[in-house]
Length: 284
Image (cartoon, rainbow, N blue to C red; front, side):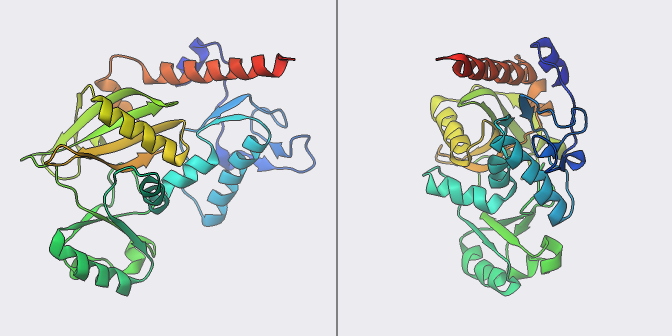
């Protein structure tokens, strides 16, 4: 990613959000590791490391502050917050009319058990970490006894109806959305229902149909993400549904099966956006 930005003509510096400080005595109100009080023109957020609630809140606060100061952020703190919290992602997808599996989120273990008793007869549920990624920590829930204790899910149960693709193997799709268009896509297949590439899923290049592309763009729009990895499953009737939206997507697996450089596309688009901003600022 850094090489792509340099090739696009940018001067870059890598910033760890943990090392960014609020400083009300500085001109901007912030102090950044490599530039002090000087602000960058743009920030491409690649990851938000884990930490205490207070630490993560402060790091997101830095991103909110940069946006308030007029810095271009992809993605901004609001989009990241909406995607890191899977329950909010599901809420916003449903609210925007984007097809997504039935989902429930609760803190009460008793409520979670009652939900499984009610819903499991209609098919299994998937228990996901609320803040999880890359297919880690997923569990298939068929009965209340399959649920872990509350401390095993950090006190929050996020349960989603298991979706079958209607085929003998397991497959779904990852579409990479950049500023309202799909720039790369792959099918992920596996011998188990967890298809993430990091968990052993096999990526294959695909050309998604217009309907799937529109669905992915609508999903990214629903959470306000300029950059998004949208996970889509097609059911046995051929209907696509959005499983998740990732605001800080990894793309190593996707890049292996994509002809065009994802990093170059992001760098080029961000530099173009900065140029547009500069032209607008100079306009009378």
